[in-house]
Length: 415
Image (tube, rainbow, N blue to C red; front, side, top):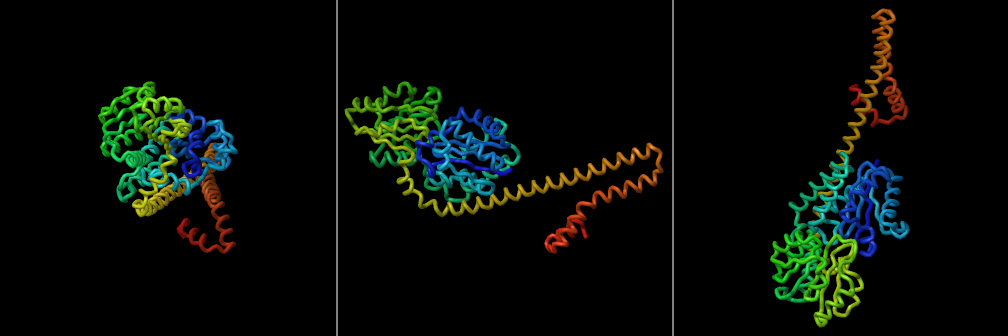
């Protein structure tokens, strides 16, 4: 059995494909159960964010192939279309990848902090679904510890940069000042909360939050002095928005081309800046065809992101060293667990031999044989049975003239 990490991310596939492979939060519990049943894996974790969908599981090469087939079937995708965009890591490479992801080293924005919370959420969902066993428990706890160390002991989080921050930076570049700009935020999750925080820091004051659940939207709106509406009210308020930033878990677009056309008429074709941070997308791609609508997706933010990365490169190198040590410690724990299994199996084997010979000796005593003769025979049989396999192995190693195993034999047998 080996640890595997199977995934697709912003480096290997465009947003159009990634959104087809994404798992909505409500899909994850059922998907975990299906994955454990169909592929019969002992551990399973599904991480699905805007920029990646990854499956971590414990199994064999054959089971890894079954997981790939299941992923294609679950999302009703042609496996031939999906396969070229997938990556598959095993054992040390899988553990390294997980720790790099949790530390923000594999993110679209180097060092972004949100991913750690998303990894923890994925882990908690798997625990609730019963697909976390001791090995993955240890792996993920070590991952969280390393990610925390990276955050506290390096400058990876300095000059805070995230997809949310980049979206706000782009809006500021376009409008200059944000204090008189009207902003519509769609969604009320962590990403939109982070967007709202950055907007307030940049002086934005005309904020409106639209959310499927009014109460959830109200809680966020009150925290930032914003108005609140439901998603059904978006067409009515869209026309007054200079900036629209959306990030929801909706499986269908919330804003279509026709809705934006109507809003632009209301605005008398005053330009509108839209940023879609969601996967699957919240805003139809066709909106970009409109003359006065400027639509950006997460894939369009790469240039700005690159400008903010230089200060984090040195910190990333430090983080890689910490991750290397973390993976080595996890591997040592795995090795120790394997040794514990060997010791347990050997002791059980010896116990079985002992019980077998004791039962035979007891039968001989019941049959009236002399106790001294029975005890002598028991001792001889027990010692011969226990010495047979080690003696055979020792002879073979000596014949092969393997010096290192000979030293190991001396240690094991206390010779």
